[in-house]
Image (cartoon, rainbow, N blue to C red):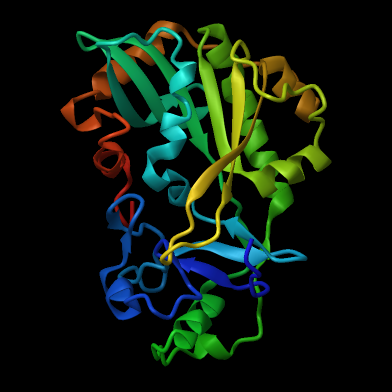
Length: 303
């Protein structure tokens, strides 16, 4: 791993923010997320016409790349391809669909990867995305990075001494509680739920919560799977996402991690009805059209 500068923005709109050879004027003007192929949805509250575009920061000792935007995990659709093996009822000839934001008891699930035959749901995998939340504003450091890249901002925020931090504890507790609420739902209907996170975040949760009962490598019979990814060194301004580890447990295991008991139930037919109402030609997914499918499923800026 290349050495990183401490506590700064290292990716803007999917590009290495230390690479001055990128066309930054055009990138900052277009404000496009390269992972959703839409305008970056993270906008300034005081100026909603401005997309922030921060994908990753460096943090820690030694500094490591930390993802702070869930859309960054959509790189090349790799996270969805890495869930195909969990569609145990999928057969050749079935179609794949990528369906965003499906509501079930316990909250929304970010994506469903769905196998269909004759437009009827045969199998599905729920996929949740979680990156780190920050404390404090990243905006001043973002603006300082932009100026180091040779683009004047005339922004007084550049001169502030305030620094951002990482909200490890609250982010971890929040996502584990959410997974706990949803895990028993998926176990009840005998389907899989996958949490996609970064490797550094998984390492933190291992240290702070009870994870010694998780299976590693993951066991396909388990309901809850965690796929942890790392960022590779940049090539031509882009850091590729790579699967680093997979662990798994059941609904009880998530409860044990939090020392609580599972409580949510939902009927299989309710989930199927929600999915079949949303699948269409626009949601059709394959490893060869991942970009198009993700673009159709991604939120627009400001939503």
